[in-house]
Length: 393
Length: 207
Picture 1 (tube, chains in turn red, green):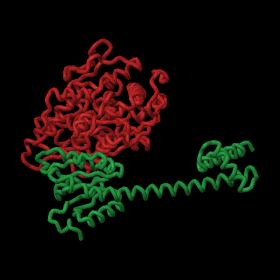
Picture 2 (cartoon, each protein chain N blue to C red):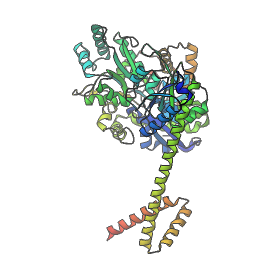
Picture 3 (cartoon, rainbow over the protein chains, first blue to last red):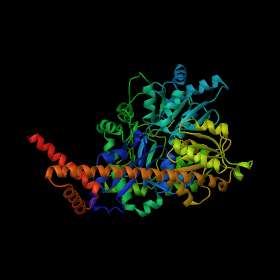
Picture 4 (tube, chains in turn yellow, green):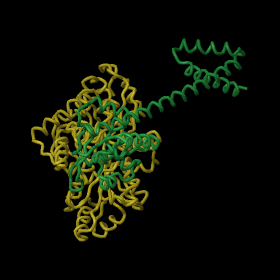
C-alpha cells in the first residue's frame, strides 16, 4: 500500500461511482467494504444502476463521476453509437472473463444428444447447435439475448456461433435484454438463450430453466471485461482524485486476486445493498466452483473471474483495437486503421495505469500491445510480467 | 382539440414508465397536446414486440428503465429491424438533453422523423416528470420535518425527566447544544436521545 499522504491532494473527495448488479462488480464494492476509498481520503458513494445506457448517460451528464463499464463502452460512447456522445477514457481495467452462454433446457438436451458437452469443450456445443439448426431447416429462428449491443457478451456470442458454423446475423436473431430480465425471459420462453455475466447464469442453472453451454473463459480466455470509465474532461479537472480512485480499486483487485478472500467477497456482494441475492447464487463463479447445469458436480474454474492477476488492470490497446473493430462491424461502419489506432490511444490510457501501478510498486508492461490467441498456458511477456492463457475459439 | 390531432401525421408514441400515476399524467398531457399515444407499458413487458407491432415514431421512456438497453439495440440496422431508432440527442442542444435527463426522462425516435417534431413531445414529458419530482421532494421534506419534530419532542421529554427541568429549559438546552455543535435541531435531538437512552440503559444494567 502506498502512503496516501505523499500523493497530491484530491481535487474533490466526494465521488459518485455507478455500477450494475453483477458479480464482477466485486472490485468497486470490496474497495468500500475494505475501507480502501477512505484510506485515499475519498468519500465514494456507490450508485447501483439498472442499465448500461443509464450509467453511460449519467456519466456523460455528470450525475456520476465514474462508472464500472463494459470494456467496449468507452469506445462506443466516444463514437456516439446508440446514445449520447462524449469522450470517455479508462486508465484501469477491473476484470477479465466472467460471462457465460446459457440455453434453454430443451436446446441443451438437443445439444447433448448431438454430442455437445460444455464441460469438455465449448466448440463441441457450438458444433452440435450448428448441426441441429441445419437439420431442422427453415422453422422459426432462435432468439438469443445479449446484455448490451456493444459488449463482450455480443462478441462472445458471435464467436461461439461462428465456431459452430452458424451465421450470427442470418441464422439466429440476437436481441438485447438487461441482465436482470434474462432468467425470467428464458423461463417464459420468449428467448432461447443468452450471454450474460454472473450471477445470472448460475441463477438460471439453479432454477433449472437453462444450462450453460460455454463460459467466456472457454471462448476468449482472459478477455478484458469491465473497466473504470470517466469522462476525459473529468480526468482533466480531477487528476489526483482519479489517481486515488484507481489506487483504491487496484488494491481491491489485488485483494480479490487471493482465492482465500473470495468466500468473504461472495458473502458481502450478496447483501441487500449490493447484489441482493442469496450467497449461493454469487458463490459458484466467484469461488471458482462453477456448475454448468442443475444436478451436475461443480467444475473447478479458479479463473472464471480474474481480478488483479495476469496484469488484469492493464487496458491493453491491442484489446481496445479488437473491441473497436468488432463494434464497427456491428453497426456496418468501416473504421480506418489510423482512426482505430488513434481513438484507442485516446480512450485506453495505459499511461494512467502505469502511473497508478508505480505508486503501488507493481510491475506493468512496457508496451501497449500484446499478441492474442497464441498461448495455452500462463506465460511471461517480459521479465516480471506474467500473463494468462489467451486462446480463443 | 388541437391542430395536431386533425393532422394526419400526428406523432405516434409509446410511453414506458413503471410509475403508473406519472405515466397516466404524461399520457393525458400528450393526448391534450395532440399526440397519438399507442400504448403505455411498464418495464420488461415485451417492448421489442410492441415496437414491431406498432412501429411508433417516438418512445418516451423513464431514465431509470432497464428497457433502455433494449431500445438502443434497435439503433443497429439489420434485417430484423426495418426502422432504426436513434436516441433523441441529434438536435445538438446539450442543455435540453441535460434538462431531460435531470428530470428523469429520455426519448428514442425513428431515424426518419425530424427531431424538431419530437422535441414538443419531450417538452410535455419533461414538464410532467419535473412536477412529479417536486411533489416527491416536498413530500420528502414534509416527512423529514415531521420526524424531526417528533425527535425534538422526545429529546425534550428525556431532558425534562433526567434533569428534572421545565419544558422551556429543556428546549433552550437543546438549542444551545445545536448552536455550539453547529448542527440542526433535529440532528442534536437525535444525538441527545442516543446519549440519554444509552446512559439510562447502562444505568439499568448497573442496578
